[in-house]
Image (cartoon, rainbow, N blue to C red):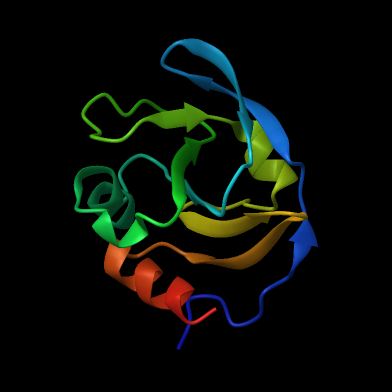
Length: 124
């Protein structure tokens, strides 16, 4: 069973801008990327932001939010409301897996835990 039954494959931009700890930054897809949209007060998000993420070593793992602050997170969270809309990630906590050539979403789902996401993307 998957958190989202039907993937809606779609092309996406190969780069975008977001706000990180050092101000506005540009991100360019260079390898398969796991983008996790997080929100405040979310158990699944907390397990990602503070947990063991070794299962995702083969991915460029990035965290994004449309709003909020994550001062205690072990991971950097980029503020990127426009990117979330562009990628069709309307309701965090969700994730997408993006392949770079061509830039397209190849997996997506709802975030409950790192283990659940790792299992879902391993069978894509």
